[in-house]
Image 1 (cartoon, rainbow, N blue to C red):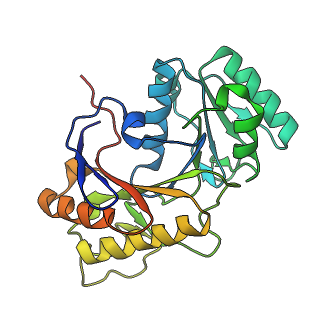
Image 2 (cartoon, rainbow, N blue to C red):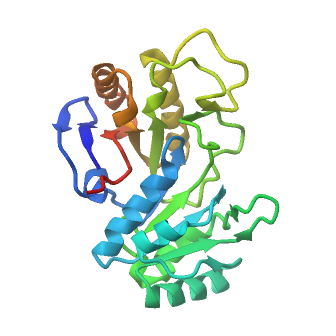
Length: 266
C-alpha cells in the first residue's frame, strides 16, 4: 500500500512513506474496528485481514449492515475457512472459535439474502461480545466490521439510522474515495446523491463530508481515522494533500491517511 502522507491531529505531517503494513499505519488501539464510508471499505478490511493472516494473528471479518461474501481470492489472501452463518451469541461464538481453530481468519454473517446474494448483518451486540468471549480476538484490530454500504461509489449520502453501529467500544475508520476529487457532484460518485450538480467535489465539499464523519464518530464516542483512498487515481494530488492537512486539524480526527488500500502486486 503506497501511503503518500499520514497526518496527525494538529495537521503536522507525521510520515511520508511507502507503508508495507496498513495495520501499523492505522495504529489501531481497540479490538473492534468499524469501517464506514465509500470507495474501498471492503478492500481495506481484507487488506488488514491478509496482513494479520501472514503474521499468524487471528482475525474476524463481519458486518452489521450487509456485504458481499468473500471471493475465492479474498479467502486465499486471508487464509480463511468456510464462512460462519449464525444468529445469537452462543452459535456465533461456537462457530467463530471453531473456524479460528483451523484458519487465521474467520468470516461471520447472519445469513445470505436470497434476493441479493449479500451477507446479512449480525446483531450489533456480537462484535464487542466476541472480542471479549474469544481469547484469540482480544487484541487491537482483531474484529473488522463493515457497517454500511455505498453501492461501489466513492462517496455516500447517509440516511437516518446509518451507519449500523455495533455496540461500543470500537474505533471508526471512515473511507473517502478521493478519486471523486474534481468530478461533478452527482449519482456517479455519490450513493443517493440524486440529480447531478453543477459544482464539483473539491476541498470545501470534502471538509463538509469529513465533518459529517466527525459528528457520527463523536455520537458513539469512537476514535476517528479518515482514509483518503484511491489517491493513485486522483486528478490533483497536491490539492488533496493540502486538504488532508486541513482535515487533520478538525477536532475529533485522530489521523488522516492518504493512499491506496489495495496492495501493490509484484
